[in-house]
Amino acid sequence: MNDLSPLLTDEGQALLGTLRDHDPARELAIATRLRRTHPAELVSAAIGQARLRQRAVAKFGAEDAHRMYFTPHGVEQATRKAVAEYRAGRFAALGVRSVADLCSGIGGDAIALARAGIRVLAVDRDPLTASVARANARALGLTELIEVREADVTEVDTTAYDAVFVDPARRGGRGRIFDPESYSPPLSWA
Image (cartoon, rainbow, N blue to C red; front, top):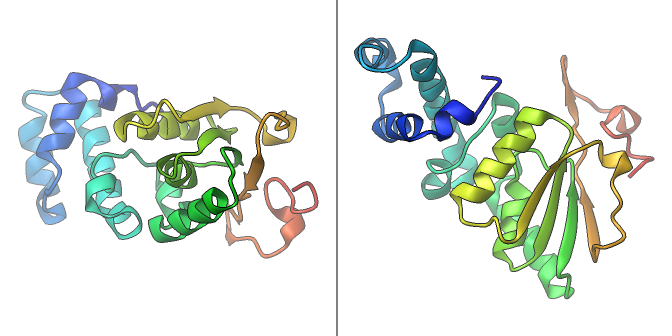
């Protein structure tokens, strides 16, 4: 999936609703039935998203996971809800009112920060990931507190924010990256 917009349409939302508790063992039969009344590409995207939502339940809980949007890497790399809530609570306890969340991914930490009443600038350089983060803020009713920006985090002016949170990518094409200078961006930049 390179474009989230078909899933955000009324038809895409209806498909996602019918797939909420689908049985993965029956996907072929479900896809065949749904393709009779919906475009094949949309059915494939909805089934893929439903699979990602099922995987995301372990990190985000069922209530949020079934409303949110994901990419395969986004599910894998997202911060668990309990960890993000703990971090957000620490920021709030320090009196932080605004955070620049650099390398925000699909928005797991941004969501927790916003729910703690903190205004967030969520930045990711990947267009699809930024679109997913934006859709997640909208799906969870947090657009008043989360601004999503597609940009290179090394070029973002953070002076208007009380705090900066950076969680660089630590996975590459070959799996986990152990050298902090190979993170994206490197730890020395952060």
